[in-house]
Image (tube, rainbow, N blue to C red; front, side, top):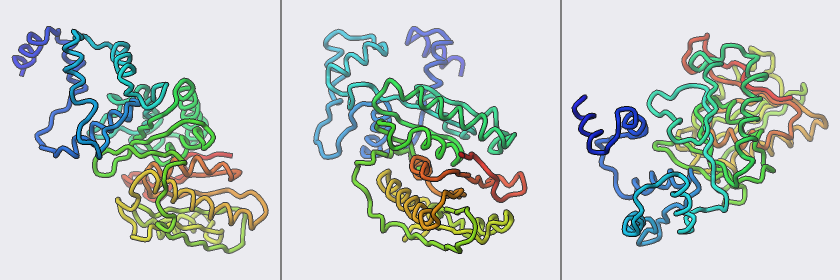
Length: 344
């Protein structure tokens, strides 16, 4: 293997360190994807840096002969500054200011390290033992504030943000609270649904029908608390009921959200669908709060794509206080739910 690296270094005129830096961002696969899949993968990269995606309806792509034209013009070296100027000259950017890709992680993905495709990364893994937070107070006094400050700082000088979240639902909700609906930025979020996809979270985008979700309201009229649970990717109804009983909250009002097609990994199809479901859930919960005539604490249980959790965070400012609950996936701390991030 050392001879392969040496041959590669000699051919490219790189030293060992330069070659390692390049190879750390290179992935090889023996799969043979079709052209449609390749276009989707390329679009994921284009959109993450603010470049125009490839339109499926076009017979030819603006990018097809670009590198050859630049080569014929004698362009051989492409620094970030030069490449940006060339793309601006070709009118390839979607916005006048570039998009920024911001990553947040609270745990390490076993095979997909997001550091290689983000402009800035907020790494919060120091506060966690794998998926379990070391000190529950850190949700409120360390993790939450860092999410807010990092996103606000990262959003200041760009028109659009692309978010990549390897983290708990609390992180997605916290990111949504920081970048609420009045943030004035175009927002996209990377979603792993099978292969990686970019979901557009523009509230002006076309929406899927709100009838795509089934909302069940159980209002006992007792207490000032309210429970909102979403069973989109898996049915968490019984687990939530058990947790509420353990916390003495089994008699409070509860809003439960299910997809009409049944809980599954494919129940939410895209960003517009995520928007419509989150809005319907918050609207139903806000209606219960209005009927009570006073602010309530919202207890939030989520089994849904991060995009749904993000929009829930954006819209949750109508509640005086909010607590997100995290499921113990690895069953290393007795299983069940534990409190995550909280506001108010």
